[in-house]
Length: 217
Image 1 (cartoon, rainbow, N blue to C red):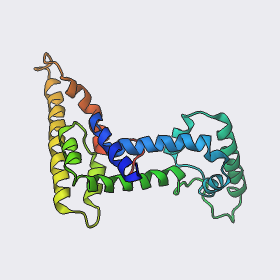
Image 2: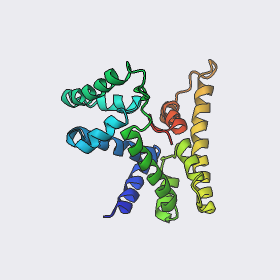
Image 3: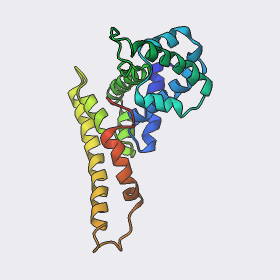
Image 4: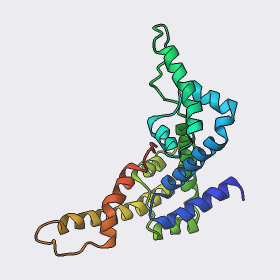
């Protein structure tokens, strides 16, 4: 199975989860990259040098890596990072900003994956099996990835319109659940029970509106 087929199957399978399939796949690949780095990358001189050159990781990915534990790997990494801080910060001639993490190693991986999967989603939507799965399942594209699809250059307008229309229907359903939460929270209607969909909607909408944590299309 080639990489294109793998992406197709991964996106298809994630449509059964009721989440943004692009977000979910990007998150899966990020988790893989974090684990792989701790087990392999920490001992790869080229990778270590690249990360040191770019001044470590952004706040989000630094803390994600921390959650995986591994005291030795963190000691190795941050011993080098702190040496750089102690060398550059007191040096008034140094132009290196040791508080900046603009080229975070994991941000770059995540951004590349997002671009690939967003373009793939648009391409695959020409396939009736793929389009039908998205339109029939509870899966819903988040706003950032829907807009990213709209911004793809030279995209087929009919395909984009079909994706937007299908997604707007899903947004309408989600917004209805939010409206019902508001209505049932009124003192006159508090005897009405919330549906399972309503119980999930107020949490789900955060990721639908903002994408998954740490994702910045």
